Image 1 (spheres, rainbow, N blue to C red):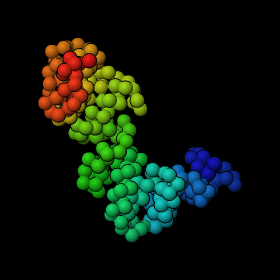
Image 2 (spheres, one colour; image 1 turned 135 degrees about the vertical axis):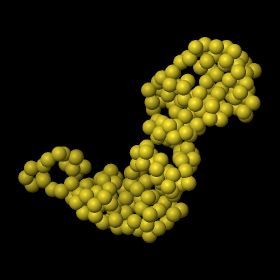
Image 3 (cartoon, rainbow, N blue to C red; image 1 turned 60 degrees about the horizontal axis):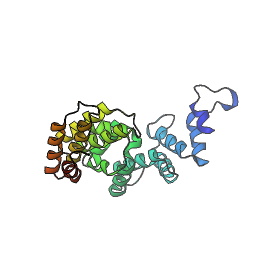
Image 4 (spheres, rainbow, N blue to C red; image 1 turned 90 degrees about the vertical axis):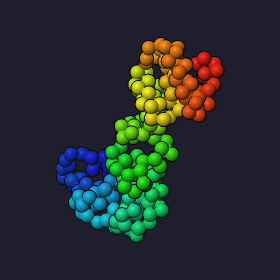
Length: 222
């Protein structure tokens, strides 16, 4: 209820309390998202800047299960903003919950604090972050997004896009992506049917170490 009030564009009378006051109350009552919002408002100096209290709100929100709080707590621990620096815990929190920051902020933070975006691929990423990673040149991200798009899981199904993503990942050195593209080419899904090209893709995948590529080459793509 406190979060709902805070989200209203304008309040009248006795309910017209500052947004920070409302989300602080929501946090105190145990709303994880309210703790995240309170921490953001305090860290950004909206209504009242207080890095120490911001870190405290992120700590509480993280304990309550808010990924956004965990990611921002990780950054606070890495920067030493409002809390003593703890690089090891900070990196662990950021790597595990980075996606909650949003795709581009997450990638920027990973580049700055995790030595690059590779650690993010160890997690169960959503399509938005995979797309951003793919556009930044991560072939494994393109492959994972391609499978997600082909299967229509967590992303709209699109055979043409899946084929394009597999091609990008295959050219980027992901052997299994070559095999996956070969299957689409073999059956004419999202691309013209071409048995010879499919076989060449399975051979390429197999030679690059893909067990699936070798299996499909022996079975002629089935």
